[in-house]
Length: 355
Ligand code: ATP
Image (tube, rainbow, N blue to C red; front, side, top):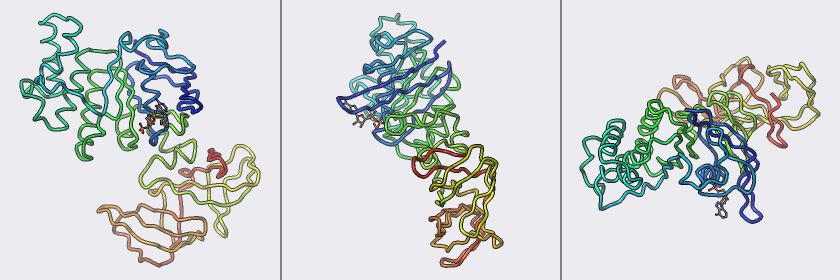
């Protein structure tokens, strides 16, 4: 059992609260990503789980045991950083074997584990090479090898692919996820890259200013964001927000944007008159001559099979993703329609989700 439970965790640096009362559970064998912009508290959260930073308050439980005040070395956890510090005077095999030798493990067991790590990471052919000439990807595989030979119950990874170029990062994302599927070790992974998070995570914790705004599967986070911050952070281009004033009553399933009446999922609780934001993903916008929600085409970005068309409306600028066979000239006037079931509605004042 290697469940990680974080309860009401808080970290202050002087007056500044870097992590605010965070609670989440990573189930045994789950791959969880902490995602958010720079400075939102991801690394601090991870360092507290690792035992490299003491929380100001709250608890951390590993497999049900309270480890809040245990030292890093007493936790059955391996940490992989972005900057993979390999020992330059050792070859790959020696680098991977090093943590085991430090533990005083027998030669035969070290050899077995290094061979196994080499096989899992597909680096058997470079085990006897010096690390100095290795590519970034191979260096990162060696760093991972050094973490997995310990056969820990949990892996904590802080932007482990951050130093790689984007194309190679994508390849390594697939490899890391494949590695996780084979080892099934509970993993917490920090990144600010939403695509990395979406492609690897069982669950994502989206963080903003020290607070976990949403903790859910990538699908839920994409389809049902709980705040404008989450909606805006996930997706590329991000969700569009059409701003308008309205009050709503329970059961209302239509909102008025000027002349246009737009179907939305039915409202559950009364909403007093306020500025609201209708959230729509670019791929859920259709050009529809019959719609009275009108806008003027500002420009088109061609992407091969799809294109992003930017349209100025009276309620804000929107970006629509369409097939690249659809022709819309800059400056032309278009009608826009949406699929009601896929819309979100937020309060503009605090970004909270209404529906
Ligand atoms: P990044 O991706 O940039 O590392 P992050 O989300 O991991 O961002 P943290 O490194 O956890 O963010 O930092 C959260 C906040 O806490 C930041 O504002 C940072 O400046 C502050 N912070 C982190 N460590 C310390 C420290 N030792 N002393 C003071 N402030 C700190």
